[in-house]
Length: 414
Image 1: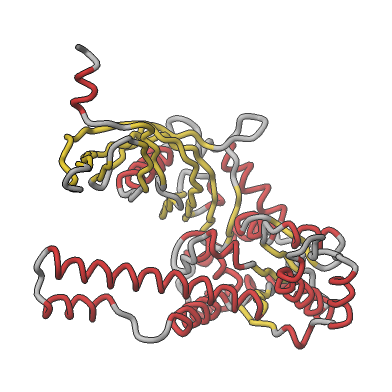
Image 2: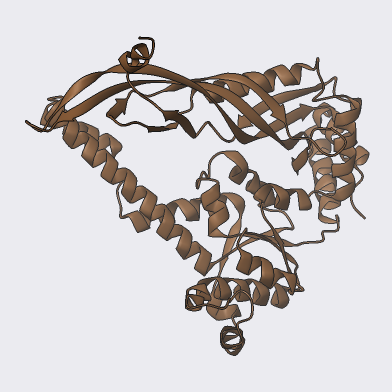
């Protein structure tokens, strides 16, 4: 039977008040035993490379950190060697881009800013990481796997080759009709690896992917259930009665209703996130233009809500002393950017300054927010505090539309 939430919270209260270390250790053991007896619909989770990339390969923050709840738990985290190699390739490409950008910036600093070669060399040492792109990427992944307790499963141990070829020639999922069908082999091998591992271990698996081929395959799989986001996957592993009870309690005590101090904390976190945004500028002009780094300020935000008008809440993690929630919000911000314009003289092929202008616009974007609540949940929310708020997305792109120098605007008045 799933562990009743009131029992778990009661245990948490006792753990915090017991002074005798022996009693504490015994009670911890009883709590862990109870958790091991919780019935799980799924015994494993796996994440495809696109989902990892969607989180920016941010292994030390955001939603990917929450995967650590599975380490030393009954739930197994598996990663196919195919997806592992794809992730290494993509992370390596990002590392190469960063190294190239640093190299170009340092060359420009030496040439344009006249920074000495000795200082440039010092900067290179500070900004360099030893090892090839492949080795650095693999090291990051292995470190993350250790952090969350993940196991790499090898395709040669679990893939039925005749079945793989049958699916290819019969155009069965994840293969699709078309000339690019052969490019779907990696997905097919990954899925058959997961299926084979699941059958061998008699475990149902949650797979995180938005790929259509994965979706079509999972529709006919008895072992693999597909979800589109890591947040949705994490929620499935929280015992259902606990999730329901937590959400009901949060709504009863109006955690996210007007007048609650938590709203002010969230608002402040979003404001900081907007201010630190390093957004990409999009604009159109008949003239050549450059711009300084723009900045943005918070205007407002609105939480995602359900059909009843209540804030949508996902329970990402529950343990004996804290709860991690995820809510979504649409944010409106005002962005400002200073543009400088120039035009080329066809006679001498030289660009001449044509003035400048400051443009402001509003931009709307969506972000997920992680809330970590800690305290004595058995007493309602009066003794519960928000110990961490993490805004997962900043303002990424701002479109200023058609732009021109200020003097052109003045000419319109004559």
